Length: 118
Image (cartoon, rainbow, N blue to C red; front, side, top):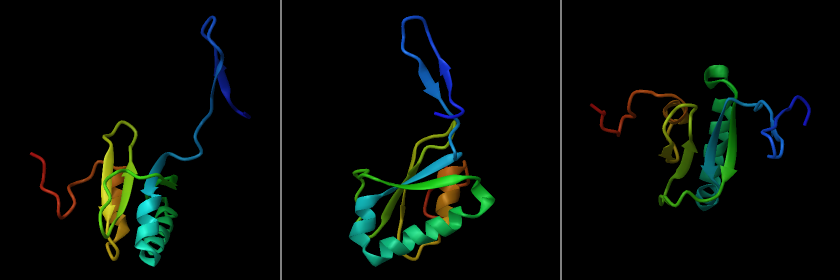
């Protein structure tokens, strides 16, 4: 791996490390996208367009397996920000994706439908 560093601890095998090409990753459920049909593709495209801005830095959008949340009419997204808590969020068709990305990628104030934490 070019640019990779290796560490060796005695008898253990060498472990290669490399810098990630992105700062964060947003995961989206492939099954939700498929179940929503064209609306799922619209959500994916809106997320892709929003992530192209430099507002959140370099973020990669990846489809993944089921999160076992399975909303009827929504797309499940997940992120684990550095030093942050694990977050799952359901995005429904027609919902603006920017507030959802803010919630997933940064410690932000609560979303409109979420009760504030005291």
